[in-house]
Image 1 (cartoon, rainbow over the protein chains, first blue to last red):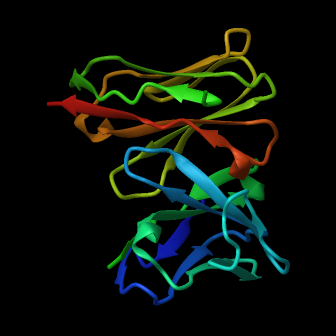
Image 2 (cartoon, rainbow over the protein chains, first blue to last red; image 1 turned 180 degrees about the vertical axis):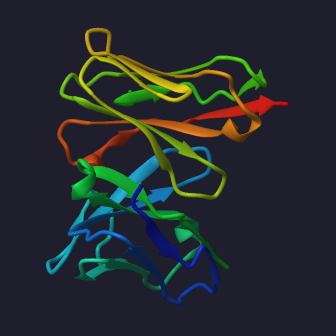
Image 3 (cartoon, one colour; image 1 turned 120 degrees about the horizontal axis):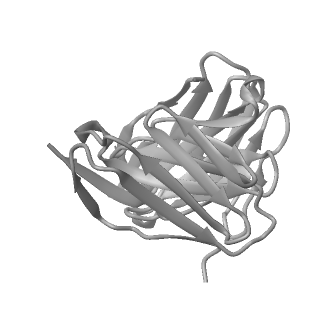
Amino acid sequence: GAVVSQHPSRVICKSGTSVKIECRSLDFQATTMFWYRQFPKQSLMLMATSNEGSKATYEQGVEKDKFLINHASLTLSTLTVTSAHPEDSSFYICSAIDRAANEKLFFGSGTQLSVL
Amino acid sequence: QKEVEQDPGPLSVPEGAIVSLNCTYSNSAFQYFMWYRQYSRKGPELLMYTYSSGNKEDGRFTAQVDISSKYISLFIRDSQPSDSATYLCAMSKGTNAGKSTFGDGTTLTVKP
């Protein structure tokens, strides 16, 4: 299947700092990528849809100024958590649709963010 | 009430057992159904992808969808310790799988 690479896998930061997470589609072009948040023993919650060359679409309740998304190329989307606070600590996962694979969804390996 | 209900388990079975994982849903607009396997602290991996009612088999895995009952299942035959993971069901109204609604996942342990 298609490969989606996500970095870093784990990051620890101080409260008030910003953290950038990268999501790359390695062997296909992804005009659309998705960002999720997952708390322990809970399901994936869609945060936003990242569209190449245009603004991201955020789900209700997600602060767009706090979670900045940039999708500057067909293979890279970034999520920046700005002015991070301890309540932002979570597991963040990206995904991308491979249109050549019947629109199937492929996930990155996730990023565990811990804000001290 | 959640749109997708999934028993969180945990489910523990001996190696070689047949495992049955299930989800129910309430939204009749769902047409596409997926099962993902997620190892601890990793992203989900797509196992099965089905459209509408019916069965689909892939190796040791069989997915069943019953739209009339709003009930989907994943069967794992000859379970292996490497199958130990959390299994997430997901479903969507259209082909945009990124907008899927996910179950909370069932944690499975296969004991050698």
